[in-house]
Amino acid sequence: MAESLPALAKEIVACRRCPRLVEWRQRAGADPPRRFRDQLYWARPLPGFGDPRATVVVVGLAPAAHGGNRTGRVFTGDRSGDWLYGALHRAGFANQARSEDRNDGLRLRGAYVTAVNRCPPPGNRPTPAERDNCIPYLVEELRLLDRRRVVVALGSFAWHGALRALRELGTELPRPKPRFGHGAEVEVGRLALLGCYHPSQQNTFTGRLTEAMLDEVLHRARALSRGRGMAAT
Image (cartoon, rainbow, N blue to C red):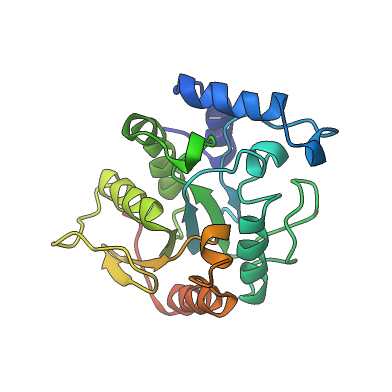
C-alpha cells in the first residue's frame, strides 16, 4: 500500500499494465489534432488531483485522449473539465472556474477529482480487464483520503467503479446493489454516494445535463460533507 498520495501518484504515472491503453495514449500524443500540434503531450497515466483533506471525492470514467492525456491533469483541457471545474468553483470547491493546463493555478478546497481508469481508452470504453487493472489505484486513493464523506460518481461506469472500490476497502454495500441515476443518493457504509450524469459533450450538448443539474449535485455533496460525520472504512 502507498504511504501517501504523492507516493501513489508516482506508482500510477509509471503504470504500463494495459498494452492497448499504453499504445493508444502514446498514439494520441504522437499524432494530435492540428490545434494541439505545438504541444508536448503528457501521454502517461493520470493520478487524481485536489485537496488531500477532501471530504468530497468526484470520480469520472477516464482521461480524455486530448484533454487530461495532453495536459497531465485529470479533467483538464477539454469541455468536460470546463463544465466540472466551473461547477466546482460555483459550489465553493475551486479557486477558479477554468481548467486549461496543470500549471494554470487551479486549486481545490475540500474536493478531490479522480477516475476509475487512468489512461484514455479507445471510444471511451475500457475493457473489463483494463478496469480491473486500475481499480486498485482508486481503492488506494479512497483509503488515503481518510476524511472523505461523499463520493460523486460521474456516470454509471464511475458509479459501479466507486462501489467496487468501496467494497474492496471492506465497506458493506447495500442490497440490492444500488442503481445509477442522475441525482441518485445512497448510503454506503458511512459515506454518501451521489450519481450525476457525466459532463461529456454527448450529455451537455443535448441538454441531458445542464449546469443547474450539475450544480444541484455538487451543492448537495457540499451539504452532506458538512452535515455527516464518518469514520474511515
